Length: 143
Image (cartoon, rainbow, N blue to C red):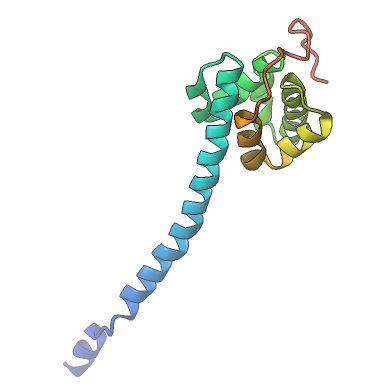
């Protein structure tokens, strides 16, 4: 009988562990959501400057397709962002071309690729205007 009573004894350690687990998950999740919202708002502003629907910034795969269209690439090039190694190369190329479409240089485009959550709002809320695609829309080559 004593063993049964001792087995049911709880000093609150389990509840504290559960609270710590929830807090340790909530803080990174909050930071991730803040970074996502910051990047999406900047992308929203970019899309509206380029006369594309702003809501497309919040749709994960579709926003890559719209970015490809903005720089003059076929929209299926935006789908290549999902391919593991090729996606990194395509993201850098699209970001460089996106920066050039807004009158910025190659260095800004590389920074845009590397630090998108910071650079997208900078480009979106700056006085930079969309000057059109930098590529010929009929050119379907990857590079």
